[in-house]
Amino acid sequence: MKSKELFSNNQIQQERIVKESRKLKKVNKLLNLIFLGGLTFLASGCIGLDTSGRFNEAKPSFSIEMPISKEEKPKKKLSKDSEREKDTNDEKRESIISSFREKHMEEFQALSAMKNKEEKLKEVFGGLAPNEAGHYLVYLEGEAVDQYYGFDIWQISPEMTAEVFGLKREIYGTQEPALELTGLETIDGEISPEKLRDLIQTLPQHWVNGEVSSIKQIDNKGDMEYRDGIKWTTVGGFRRESNKDSHTGQIVFYYESRYYSFGEIMKTVYHEMAHANDWDDDDDVKYNDKLDLLIKIADRISAPDRYLSEYVESIKRDTPEKTRYTEALEYWAEICSIYFSNPANLPLPDIEIVDWWIHKNDQNFDSAAQLTRRDGLLANLGDKASIGLAQR
Image (cartoon, rainbow, N blue to C red; front, side, top):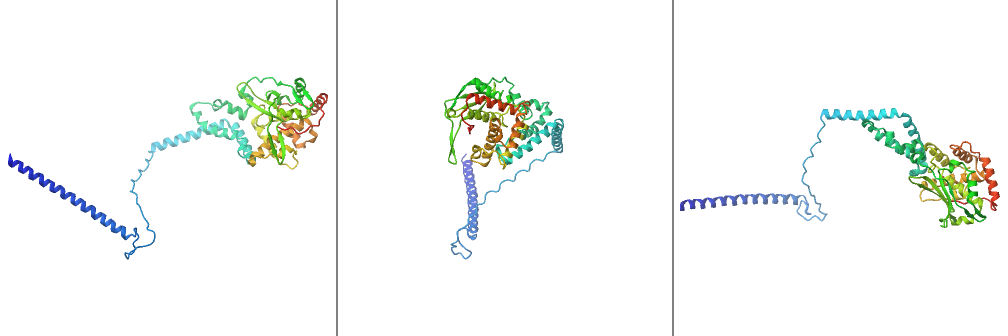
């Protein structure tokens, strides 16, 4: 037993010596590497010593090398079968779009023509220009692939189709309420609801029915702003109220309207009625026609022979595009107001634009006869003041 223990102890001791020897070799190897690395570091001048061993006053430069990353594995190439499948799917998609375009060629041509008009307006009004046709083109091309799955694109978005190709009113399909009127106080006295209705009936009825639900006077004061030292007060305004039951708007007169004459109040009614029937709000005219109206007005606001409205000429907004677009909206409302009150003061191109727009839906409207009738009604009311400027 003792001899075996001695042998075991000797064996353990020898194994320890071998292990220690291996450790020493590793330490020596590490020291050699550090020493050689230090020499390289010194020789490169990284600590400010030049080749002569003198201190280099130049700012030392340091270089840290990152461990080399493993090379990215190349993307797995598609097999020939996968490539053929991809090409087949692409061809199928192009074929679907092509056949869809061919099937609805007339609609695509109409959309492209409308998009060209939108681009023209964008040059004048920037991002404020209408862009429904452009959006619709993108929508159709993206959704055309759904034909593969059996969907009919013209049933997927009836609202968008009606917006671009039909009438806004088709979207809502609701019974529009009868026009509600209240008496309007003026400096000349009150215009009763009955007398106001008589005056409204001298206007194109498509401008009224389904567009304006009420005309009323409230006690709230209108907004005020100063432009070039001139105080402008909001006398009346048009508010579009869109909901599931109706898509009409209200003409509201503010407290200050009580200091205006019969004629001035009616001029404001015509102005606000025009807002209800512009390219933004008219529900009885197609989108393409609205683009045409805005193009005509965009040309007129900078024409040398334009109607010079003190109100329109004073408009200023924070960007040129906003200024021009607001000018267009208000120029349209102003020339309509003059058209229905004193058309002799309106340039011929503006008369032609308003005539053209009215007869889109009221082909039998007789402007001259209705003007005579309005003047007679105002005279019977006892209008004591000439028609002035009453803007929203």
